[in-house]
Amino acid sequence: MDTTTRLLESRVRDAVRRRGVDPVREADEFRALVEGVVADYVHEASLGAVPQLADVAEAAREVSDALAGLGPLQPLLDDPAIEEIWINEPARVFVARHGVPELTTIVLTDAQVRDLVERMLRPSGRRLDLSAPFVDATLPGGERLHVVIPDVTRRHVAVNIRKYVARARHLDDLVAAGSLPAHAARFLDAAVVAGLNVLVSGSTQAGKTTFLGALTGSVPAAQRLVTCEEVFELRPALRDHVALQCRQPNLEGAGEITLRRLVKEALRMRPDRLVIGEVREAESLDLLLALNAGICGAGTIHANSARDAVAKLCVLPLLAGENVTPQFVVPMVAGALDLVVHLDLDRAGRRSVREILAVTGRSENGIVGTATLFHRPEDGAPGELVRGSGFPPGVERFERAGYDVAALLGSDRSADARSAAARAAAMRPARAEEVG
Image (cartoon, rainbow, N blue to C red):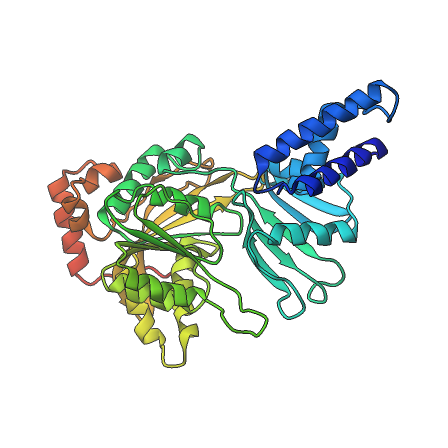
């Protein structure tokens, strides 16, 4: 920001104070105020009373960003191609554009970073100090904010702002984006309608939350959905939807609301569907208990493959206490989980489904049985899936919902023959595929 623009900013600040306008909450009034101050400045500049602005429109934008937005970071937030912004130190501001990281030319000061963090946290009411050096929050535009301060970091405040560029409301949106083939989307849509429990796995930034949001677009409109998240990210387009988020402890260390507490409270809210933004710790036990009680559910988990996701879900509930054992958890995972959708992020930044795995419902020797429904060939392109040899559980649920499973999977057999074969396979002992 040059000298003339700073002079304009000073005038706008004075006008904001005099009129008592909130730049964020009263956006229209603030915009009109800026236009009026800029017009007065341009008139004075034409008379030679003040220096000329090099670019009037650009100066007005910079002033608006400084007072109502996030200053130098606002253009990055407004750029639809940028998915994430992070600050390692004031002179090192990075972005991920189309999934590829790059260093920007933005150079900040320590004071600017602290001011930006304070401004970003103000709407959420979340705090950041020595007793709480980490913070997760949601910006007014829906972006997810994560901040860490020294001395947890070596020297500088670390800031991550994760945007949600691809706001997929339905699986069809992922098909249009090339992340999911149409035939697999039809199957997953039917699986959600039929009430199968789905786990979405993948690495960081693979698009798990976006995919989970697209899955909620298949939930029947008449059903009640409760979502539990660390911070609000999911925005299902359902009329009967309750969103819950965690809360950090106060200055006295009290008042914390964990994800596990949210899951327990959600079960008292008569949900037809329960969705967990991300399964990380002991809340996995409460989720499994809910799924085994007949509530349909979904969630995401960090994993390197679909089978790793199943194995991880067998371990996480053990964090709930010493009395929780693998002998209890493994059969519960086998009985509760139906499908695992694994997502992939390649080096070019393209996100796509790599595999769709069925959980057979059986477990042997501490191993959950699985079968591959769809997978990407070794030489396949992102978004390409071919039929595997497996068959999904819950065939009767598909039939009750009016779906022909064999047709959804692209089988050449008749629906009746396929259903009979699936039931026979479920009844006879079979060797479980290893998930570890």
